[in-house]
Image (cartoon, rainbow, N blue to C red; front, side, top):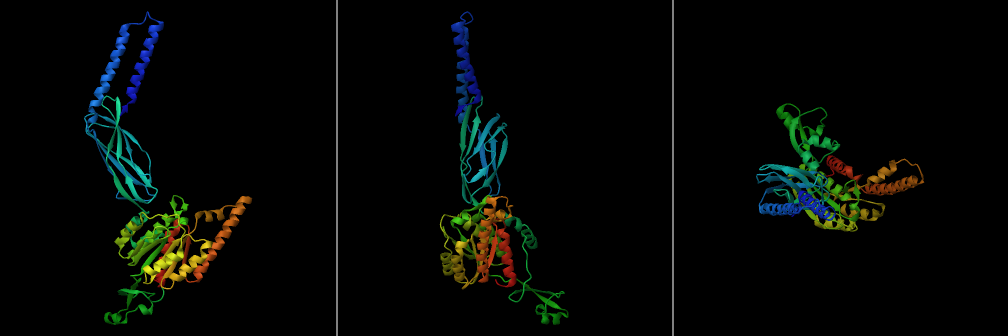
Length: 442
């Protein structure tokens, strides 16, 4: 509890008046009167009584408070947090509201100040933007309320502790969930390829259409119906896709607001969503830090299982050991699968990634999804105007040449490779997934 600005102003006025009376008595005694002093003491006593009376109602519960949070947050995405206030008194209340939100959440427009009419309710809203995944612990809500006479301001704390999970950015999945399948593909910018060869699952019979190849014609059904009938095929299902997720120190690098690791998680989730809708199974093994293993799971609704398994997983400061991670995966999963290695490869990784893919290729199809820092592309596109910019351009070009040589070597060994900036990695991964499905390799 503390005096309000009004109380401090009155006290300052009384102090100034006392000083004035003292000076008046000292230098102009003819104008001084004891009644002036009695009047000052009366005003001072009245202020003291008002201050005392104003404290009597401070024990009353004057406001009810409720914080309304979303069920979960997505990192980097704004979410509205609502605070409802109910005035339980028959007088207007001047209130300041402070919310003890987690340090990992950026919030604007706090604290609030408002006049809460007698007996009425108000709802305050602020935008909360999580900067980091994991458990977000919200604390209590603090209110600073002006007393009845306005002479005191006192703080009330309302228990509103809550735990909310901050997931990777799953908003893209939520948006695509509302669209039809073809719309989803168009929105992503994914190019679906015509499938070649055999290895397709039978889907249904339909009338013959121009362009159907002879192997699609069902001659028995055509004979019975006395018209040409073709078979429709669908992509093979029940394939296993396992993500080998690098949690090493390189993944801590940032592009814009998110780290490379967060970009990888977002891409992993979107590709998993597409694959689960296709009837494939999704698994994951993290390495170079906290090791987490999720055996392959099927079913579109199991995207939530994957979310809960990775939402609080973070990159560390360890060095990534690709060979050890490949050996660990070979021990944990023996059925043939598409293994997606998600990392940030550089020239010095040539020996490790070559050996790791060789180990995995004994049983699995390997896809290396390598992140490329955005500044490399920006440096090559920046005009060369002086010695410094020319040195940056030459160094960047040399770095990219060695990187491309490594990726080309992997492709020559039968490894599927994607190389993209973090912001477009999700599109590259889904494109490769569809290409592999259409080609019959998975």
